[in-house]
Length: 178
Image (cartoon, rainbow, N blue to C red; front, side, top):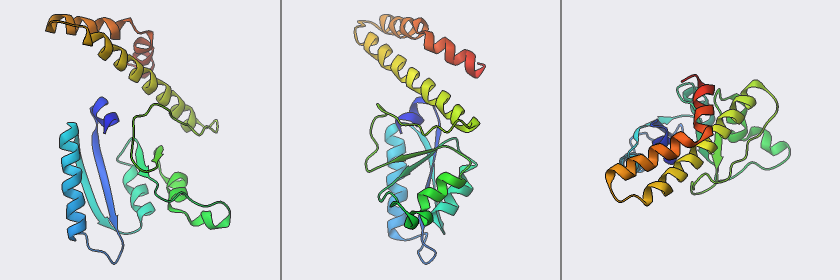
């Protein structure tokens, strides 16, 4: 939610019920209500699709409409042959978008790990990760500088000065062609 809010993004949630499950079950409706509340509380626009089917198939199909796939991994795949049928491995292998896999509760993104294989997609992911990290540092610095402000004018001045003084902002804007 923090990344979606910082990027002014729309959050597209997906809840997949088994082929025998019901899309309109009380559990699914509860998930819908919780998703809507979390988005509202975070100030993020979002929509949740509740569908039947195979999780990895649904994620890969819907990935084409997103920039990033965020998955909670409750049970990471085992090593060896048993892992070949893992849904997470299937998504990583077949999804047309980068995957951010998290365990348990999602926390602040203080430390990230990027799997890099030298491919054009991994080079793009490295650039995006570095740019996002720099923007988060700039945002934190701007927040800290603004805390000292006594008036709205000082607050605005502190924010603008901190952001425009950061080289990473100009490098990022130049790199993305803005």
